[in-house]
Image 1: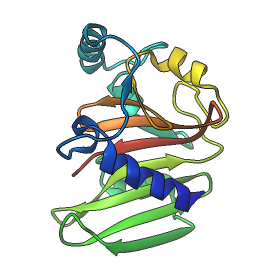
Image 2: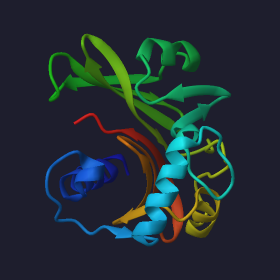
Image 3: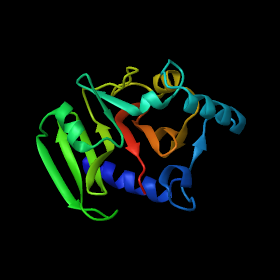
Image 4: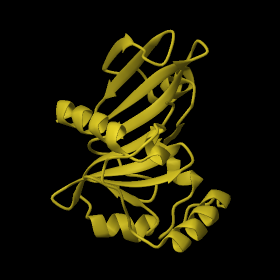
Length: 190
């Protein structure tokens, strides 16, 4: 599943729209669930809102809660590790974004990914595969309908992903047979 997700994620990044991938051009399928006017209005409302409520998406929805601890995209990994404890496995590879190494911290039910920024490793992705819900209660196995009822209609559907985003951060739900099979918090640093 990890290899499949890695391949799917790479394909999504390469083919998604400029707004999601940070790269110019778009050749991938991108469906928007609501009209442009409604999206614009919802996006402005979401960007200005700091408080999460049912049926809407806001900046607070981009903060993962794991074992009662808040982990933010862009957070220093040392701060995140002090909250999460020691990972059961850590892997690294030379970073394509500059000096240093991209790292993966593996835990039971989730992984945390980092990228170096000015000599400091920052959290760029949190992937949940089991046992953890979003702060609004969405978890693995929930339906697409429950996701959209909870986070609203201002999303993009790219392949098997339902993606809610504000600026360069997103909350994505990977769907398999109409059910959430993975939850991803992403910070697009490219």
